[in-house]
Length: 212
Image (cartoon, rainbow, N blue to C red; front, side, top):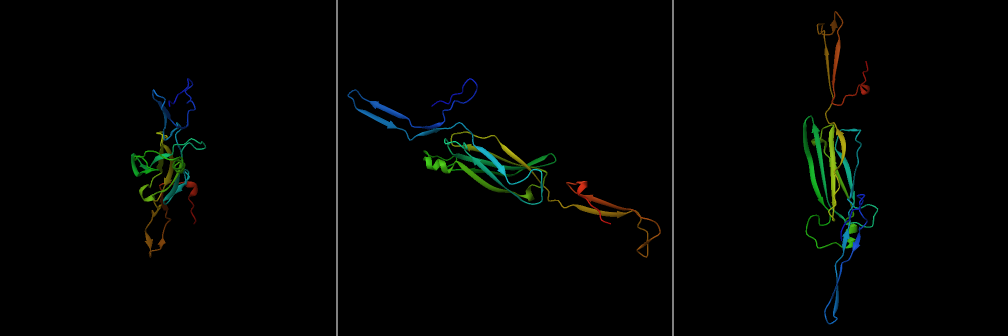
């Protein structure tokens, strides 16, 4: 069953469930019909959605998230999800490291299988994965969660990524004075200037307050 593209580049709608019938006859009129187990033609890739965090918010701890994958969402013709790849990368300066990398097999995954029943295909048409970005491994303003999905027909998605920021570094405050010549350990003959040094990785001046 060919999958044909029209001149416009659009895929001709040949998606569907098919049976292959073979009729055999001999010279004396004996006839037999052989029927295949059925096959599905599907040319649409699955959809991937990553939720659970806000890319504009700084997180100070572990960040749970959810990946939802659906094969040919909203359509009757599905082949079922085969596998989902999921990884997390963290960049600090010029160094990028992969802190999480896992492949989730759905159904029989890449394993050998003669075929699925329609009921089995329906059971693997969607998949939800719940994972957590560990703050201890991803203390960075540039963390990405990326997922990619494959279906049983060989269609695959592009990489879908969502960014987040994690900051587990405590701020540091240092106080110093320019005049430390005290009389009786608490009296000064002249004024003294206090310098406050505030170190914070994600400093926002509007969020800093001083109460005297």
